[in-house]
Length: 301
Image 1 (cartoon, one colour):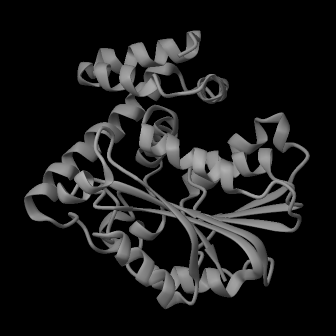
Image 2 (image 1 turned 60 degrees about the vertical axis):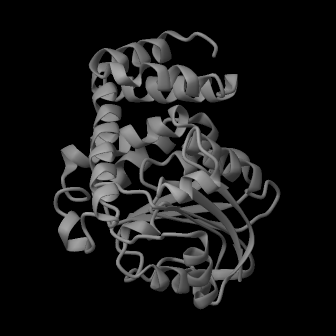
Image 3 (image 1 turned 90 degrees about the vertical axis):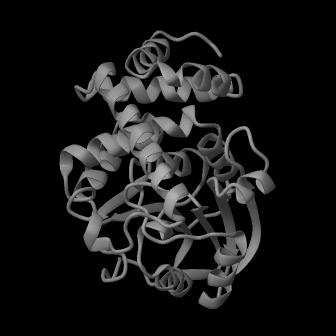
């Protein structure tokens, strides 16, 4: 890993408050490219410009680690997620600004520090079309990192994002506004319910929905709406995990077949996919032990 003061300081602070992360982070970052380290550095600088210091960012990351570990223990004991309805988690997560801010910043940092999250982002960067025109829609942009990547790599003319969390909407807007590469893009982020909002377009040339299906009670309805909104040759990119407990995960996929069957039921089909195992394990080992497996899908209408 290339040394960088901001990155090194963040990692040192993470290890200071949670020494158990030391060997994991050291091992994980051996697989990070110089560009990825630079991207993390830029994200840290963005946060600092917005009055979020490195001790705060380390707390955000530690929140994700400890919340996830607690939910993993629960899942291994009960073989189910702790919650199963949106109402059980909405107020304590999506509409709690302090918690949601920490959650989203911590989750953004995992995009660079966790090898499985890093690989998902790489897959997205490889698959998004670089010459296609039209309008790009992202459902649940969260921290905004994927939407920023799409603006940097693609040639779409207009970008729209929709998220029901006011905190996520503001974070995405702030991140996009902070990068010179995105200044030339026409974009708008809405704070609204994807299933209820009419949106501004009848058809979209790209639709991205990362890590949303596990947060909703009826993921089929989300996939069906995506099918309705997608142009005939649209780029459709979806991610969701198998056996991946988290404080706000309420829909449990136990196999890749579960996800594929839901996609087919919605009227979409899988063009290609990538399964990313739990760090240090194979896909088969992860599934056998009920450990998280990340799934990224490129779909077609």
